[in-house]
Image: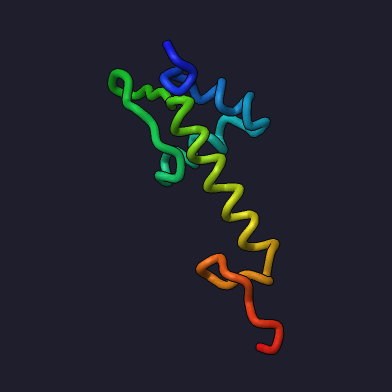
Length: 80
């Protein structure tokens, strides 16, 4: 199994991300983090989906901390 195909539990994702399992469940319930249903109540998160989520979070963080870029990611004019 390749690393991107690895399936993780919510506990494993919480450990990797260093957050509480409730945070992972909130991400899944809100649709921010994709999951694959297992049985009637369970789910797994692919390593690939976790990596995509992490990259989106980095971009979101970069956009809020870097006001020199406009909404398209282009440098803002200094004279605005």
